[in-house]
Amino acid sequence: MKSLKEQIDPKKLPAHVAIIMDGNGRWAKGKGKFRIFGHQNGVNTVRKITEAGAELGIKYFTLYAFSTENWSRPQFEVKALMELLVDTIGKETPTLMKNNIRLQTIGNREDLPAKCNRQLDETIETTKNNTGLTLILALSYSAKWDMINAVKAISEKVKSGILDSNSISDLTINEHLSTAAYPHPELLIRTSGEQRISNFLLWEIAYSELYFSPKLWPDFTPEDLYAAIYDYQNRERRFGKISEQIAEKA
Ligand code: IPE
Ligand code: IPE
Ligand code: MG
Image (cartoon, rainbow, N blue to C red; front, side, top):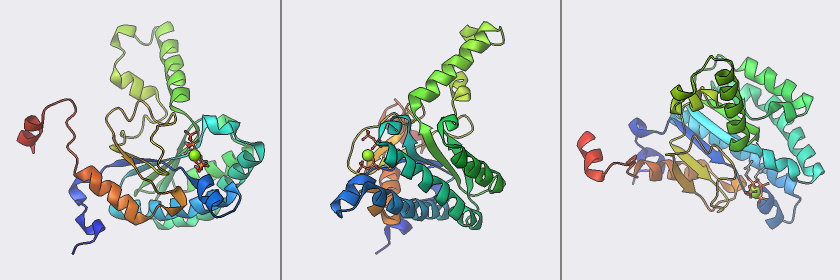
């Protein structure tokens, strides 16, 4: 019997997998611990899943780590999350180097504490020539924030005459989002059983396959990632066409 990993077709891998890492708080609560204990354990999952994805040959991983809306959580949780971020990025930089992983971020970096930004800048710089997986952390990110910025930038260009409003296309929008340098995710995974998008990559997931796992993020394993990718590979992506047209092309 082939393992799940062996059943994955390396020729049909999604280039970009986006993950809404959810359920840390509930995981900790279930163990009678504080929420931050869940976040600390969630970091281990990030490491394991990133390594598993890099090993498979995934090119881009976007992880939703902190949303615009998450600023409204109790201040001590926000502070603990920011400290965990600086700590983790610092500690994990050698692992990123070892695995040839390049770190990038999307989101409103201006809102992050200076210490976080310094550590992020340092690790982004250190890993910039790595050619394996690109790990994109969404920090203080929301899709609406990104779209508002894109609309502002586009309207400025129209106003100053650099851009003709009639020429605005799908590509124009793509180019003005913080995700401009990356392909759109073929697969979006959310853990913890919640079935919503929570303001993540709204434009970019227009045709992504969605996969909801009941596992809480700290319990999510490489096997669960393989299961999601295997499931994705067995779907028919029709992009508005009919099944026969897709079969003809294959
Ligand atoms: C996801 O876990 C991590 C972040 C949003 C930072 P949660 O903290 O949302 O955990 P639950 O959903 O409350 O269990
Ligand atoms: C989404 O999780 C944001 C991240 C995973 C960073 P939340 O736990 O904040 O989402 P909602 O509020 O339950 O939708
Ligand atoms: Mg949550």
